[in-house]
Length: 80
Image (cartoon, rainbow, N blue to C red; front, top):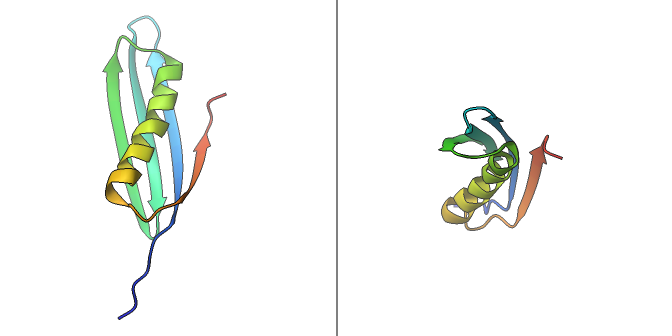
C-alpha cells in the first residue's frame, strides 16, 4: 500500500459587498489533489475589503482543519 501525503493546495478567492445595504459575501475554490472544494459565506454590516480577506482566512482555516499535511498554499485573489 502506497501512502500519498498531500502538501500543496491552490485557493481562488473573491469577495464583494453591496455598499448601500452593507451586506457582503465571499467565496473560495480550493483545489487539493484531485478535489475541488467550494466554500462561501455572507456577512452583514461589512465592506468589500473584509469580504476579500475573509475568503482567504476561511480557506486557510479549512485547510488547517481538514488537510494537516499541506505545507504549501498558492492563493489567487483579484483584491488589491
